[in-house]
Length: 119
Image (cartoon, rainbow, N blue to C red; front, side, top):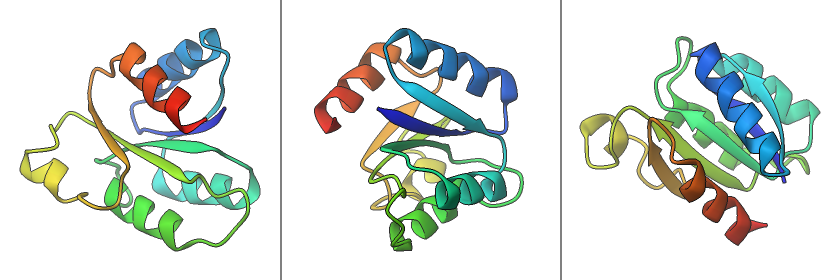
């Protein structure tokens, strides 16, 4: 599965990319909302892992724009990754935009199950 990672914490994004590669997935890291939207428009992704707290746009807005996009390479599976739980105000702000919500630090086994079920 080809995964787009969107997280302003570069170390966290890069580590997640490495972990996904160990599970036979390919991944591209972006560190801002703008980079993510540009990458999604130019690439072909099966899934996107999107941090809810980005410096230039909220992750929920990135998800909304991806949902509205009609491009063939636009990821269909959207997973929120956040320090907020799905029940926190920050997590609730993204309700309905994401297929799944994972709290940081991301449980790689849970993520693997989500990607496997979608693939």
